[in-house]
Length: 164
Image (cartoon, rainbow, N blue to C red; front, side, top):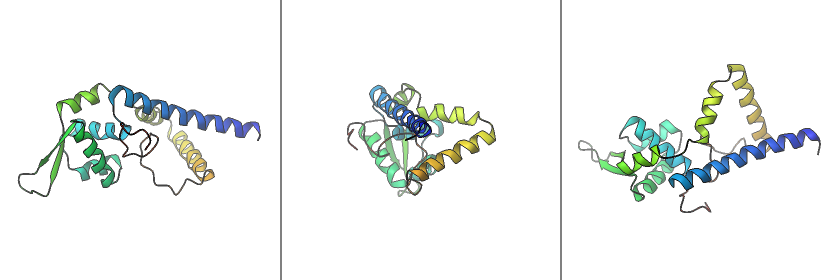
């Protein structure tokens, strides 16, 4: 293996490692996964919402959001409320404990990435995207389904279940 391959692997390993460390810190400090945090952030920013709106906004599947809302509800961080006019519709809203959990959570690695990426020149952004897409292809990962969440493991896992 040549020096350039090693440099690339080291850079990949650093990305994987910082993602893992950030996920652990978030779980330790707030008992939330990055995906759960994103649901709480959406609700905090937008108020009560339908699960379909949450899924669409944070680019997750509706089934994944349903699992995340179930977990957050079990933890007392959100509640569900039936629409008074259309009983088929269910609104999700944060509880005071959910608002506190979001406020007391450490900054997501994803937020730092988005801030730094948004500050790059457009040509730099294009180069980063092209390079990352090429790396995904080299690893035969270009066909894997992935949401725009910087986290490791299943997106609908529960903090209490670290094996998933």
